[in-house]
Length: 57
Image (cartoon, rainbow, N blue to C red; front, side):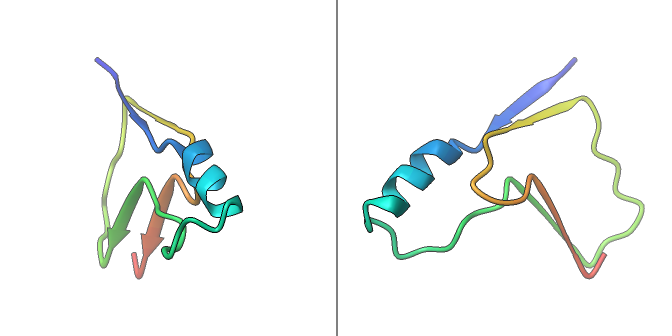
């Protein structure tokens, strides 16, 4: 089976252009200090930034 995560990036960009946000762009998935992580059967859509953001991984 497959899952979908919709980051609703267009909504973020619309609010950003209208100076309505005080926050930076969010990531759909952030993996920190990890190894051997497997992400499968997942659809990632419309992220305002990175879809998968590996940090120190």
